[in-house]
Structures are given as structure tokens and as C-alpha cells.
Amino acid sequence: ESVVIDIVKKLSPSVVSIAVEQRAINPLLGGSDTESGIGTGFVIRKDGLILTNKHVVSDTQTKYIAIIRNGKGEEKKYPVTEIHRDPFNDLSIVKVDASDLQPVELGDSNNLQVGQLVVAIGNALGRFNNTVTTGVISGLGRGVAPIDPTTGIAERLDNLIQTDAAINPGNSGGPLVNSEGQVIGINTAVAGAQNIGFALPVNVGKDLIDSFEKNGGKISRPFLGVRYTHINKNVAIINQVPEGDFVREVVA
Image 1 (cartoon, rainbow, N blue to C red):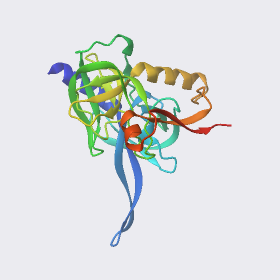
Image 2: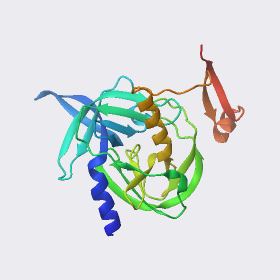
Image 3: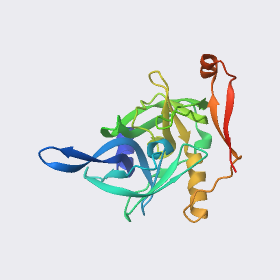
């Protein structure tokens, strides 16, 4: 038990709840600002850089807030001032105005073992901040095609970590942590079954952070020149179309 307790104490001040700013209208009180939690992230640099999933902050017309708890359980809200989305992976780097945040320790996802202990921390269901679940790595090198709820488009993700630690809606973008308290994955997707969740390997995130810093605070990716949607076997059968990648547009 002490292993998990120590991990939570170490990581909790670095875990971020991502929320949407909303303007609620009360007939008696008038307008008031509220937040609706949608996802999770974690601090990667003390000056306000946070890593999360791209689908957590995919709406370009929405204002987001990062909510961070300190070691005493006190919450502080930071408006998100910048969002840098990775066009290649389901990752985003977001920025808040801060100078004293507590960054996580990033581990190495190249030497993971099936069966090793992991802990997931996140904003479960968008309501329960810093929810802790435990489990093991159930599999490696998994591939899934989760559907982005904002676009309805499935994005193929490969080489994922599978875990039986409970990953719920709202956990997206949160850290998957090893027994040393190092982040080894970014919780990303759930399957339509119990105890099957998926996380991007943290080394994918580390490569993105390195690229971001080398390119002066911008994400730079090569691209093929087409926009496409992956059509899996079930969708292909239902719509009587071939399975594969459907090219929607050739980019100028």
C-alpha cells in the first residue's frame, strides 16, 4: 500500500484537470462563470507547460481552464493561454501562465514488461479530480481506432500500452505511472469492456516535447499530403465499402 500512497503524494500536485469555461445564466443571479471538467493533463515544465490528449482540447472555439491542486489539496485555476496540437498523435501541449508548478518525472517506455504495476491518476467522468486507480500492464504494442466525439472521425493509434487500471471518460490525458512514480504513459482510450484501457507510451510524448522546444515553442511534423479516415472492418461491412484508409482530400 505504501508504494501506491507514495506515488499519489508525489504525482497529485502535478496532475491537471482540464475544464471548459461556461457562462451559466441564472434567472435570479444573472450570468455566472462555471467550469465543466472534460479531461486530464500533467505538468511537464514548471513554467506552465502541460501535456494532455489532443481530443481533450480539440475544439478551437472553446476556452479551457487548467485546475491544479497543491500538496495541501487547495485548487488553483489557470486559463489556458496556448494550445499546440500534434497532427500526428493524440497529444497536445498546452500553456498556462505560471512559474512554480511541479513537473512530473518522465520515465522510459521502451523497457516495459507485461505484468508490472501501474497507477493511473485522472479527472474521472470529468467530476472526480485526481481519482487513483491501480493495475498492471496487460499488453504492449496494441492498436485501436477510437472515435473523436467532436469530429466523429476514428484516429488510428498504434503501439499502445494496455492496462487493467480503470480508465474512464475524463481520464484522457492523465499519467500512467510506474512503481517509481515515473510517468510511462498518457491515458488515451477505453474499450467497450471492463478493465481494458490504453495509454500512449511516454516516449512518444518525450519526442514531441523535444521537437516543441527545438522549434521555438512550435510543433513541427512532416505530413503526407492527404487527409484520410481509417475504415475498420465493422464499418466497412456495414457500409459495404472496402476496409482501409479513405482519402478525403489531397492537401495543396
